[in-house]
Amino acid sequence: MTKYIFVTGGVTSSLGKGIIAASLAKLLQARGYKTTIQKFDPYINVDPGTLNPYEHGECYVTEDGAETDLDLGHYERFLNTFTSQANNVTTGRIYQHVINREREGAYLGKTVQVIPHITDEIKRRMTLLGKDNKFDIVITELGGTVGDIESLPYIEAVRQLKWEMGEHNCLVVHLTLIPYLKAAKELKTKPTQHSVKLLSENGINPDVLVCRTEEPLYTELKRKIALFCNVRIDAVIEALDADTIYGVPLEMMRERLDMICLQKLDLPLGTEPDLTKWKEFLNKLRYPKSKVTVGLIGKYVELQDAYKSILEGLIHAGAMNECKVEIRNIHSEYLTRENAAEKLNNLDAVIVAPGFGSRGIEGKIEAIRYVRENNIPFLGICLGMQMACVEFARNVIGMPTAHSTEMDPDTHSAVICMMEDQKAITQKGGTMRLGAYDCELDSSCKTAEIYGTTHISERHRHRYEFNNEYLQAFEDAGMLPVGKNPKTGLVEIVEIEDHPFFIGVQFHPEYKSTVEAPHPLFVSLVKAAKQTQERRNSDNARMVFEDAVTEG
Image 1 (cartoon, rainbow, N blue to C red):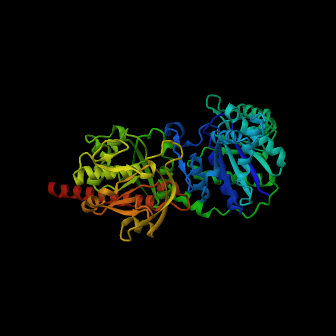
Image 2 (tube, one colour):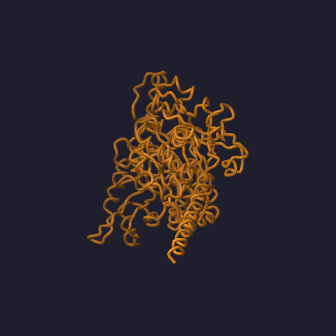
Image 3 (cartoon, helix red, strand yellow):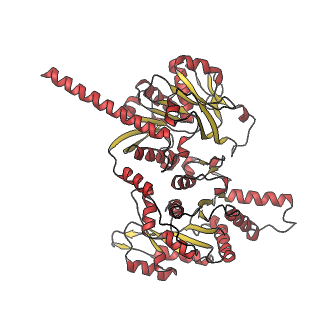
């Protein structure tokens, strides 16, 4: 029988429930248990696909084309296994399903209520991944904070499941905060006590408490928390602030979180976790031998979560190259031809990030022009690839009005246009080209060398594409369409042949980068950045030497 672990949060949001859930899953996986994680979000949107990145961070896309919460990216990066549409559920999706069934007459004329109809649907979704015994343990992260009105149906559903399944088949891990008052030089447990009390009032007594803290929890404090919160002292887990999220699994292993959960679920401990590769990755991450600076050009740079997967992909690639990647965020809305050199000249590589809409577009185009002309390594992702085509058309091919119909519907030089199968679509949510698609590479191109194969599959999220009417003009001018979808001929990858590293991709490589398998495009970009830095340092040293000889 599949066992279930629920991760709830209290006191405040953004404590890191997703990281704790992913860390616990990693440890259970390392002990030999088939484990997966799912996220239940309390907002009424059907999915985060229509949410502004400032509202909810990036929208993560799974292999099967689901637009999901960014925490699913953490799950995949930690476990190195794919998630799916079933791994992310929202209140909007729950209510939509129940209302549709009511319209079909499925409830036989009964009054449809939160209990039992909404909670029954929540429970069905919570146990869906465990139905065929594909997984030994299913971990469910509940979004929001205990006490939120919108979270109440989920808490009630968990209460019912605990009662139905029994104590050894279902447990609750509650993440809370132990604030440190610097003036008093004291850790305070009262917020945690109130959080657990609130959870208990809703019928759930947590089995394990994970306590986020800036200072270590001494034994007497753990005993106090255990006494007032009605848990065993060994089930009070210290979660000190970490220098990197990738250090959390080792901290949770030190605190025996996995062992305590397995004991409570009446499961054998399995094999001792072998985290050798994970530790090697951490050592490379913490003790780099060099450093490069990569510019991230985007219009949501004020919120780091808006480009979370890109930033994590660069961390993975940096560790692979034993190199610290310092990110310089550059807001494309304030980037112009006049200040491009000032903002970009000391960068070792540049990524132009994905996005939607016309705000900041000209800044992205100027950044691409500068890196193309100055031989700075460049990776354009989705919209970044499209704007690379626009820039090339304007400044190399000689089409000054070239643009995308997304930004200029009336342009006479639409090098980027809406995909044919998107033109009749009016509904926004979940209707883009989403999920994994195949791509065939030219065997002689740089990208094929990077991947080590000519057949790849990558995840997409877009409505617009390269206009193949201009294909010949681009090839003649030196921007080559080196990757295409084998079924539709859609251009997926472009390269400039006489540039050290200039690659634009229509897909999102960042979605598939993990700790154990860093994405080759990011690894190669960081490698190219190191080479650029070495070349610049060599040129500077030569110039200093020549000046000294001249003065001598």
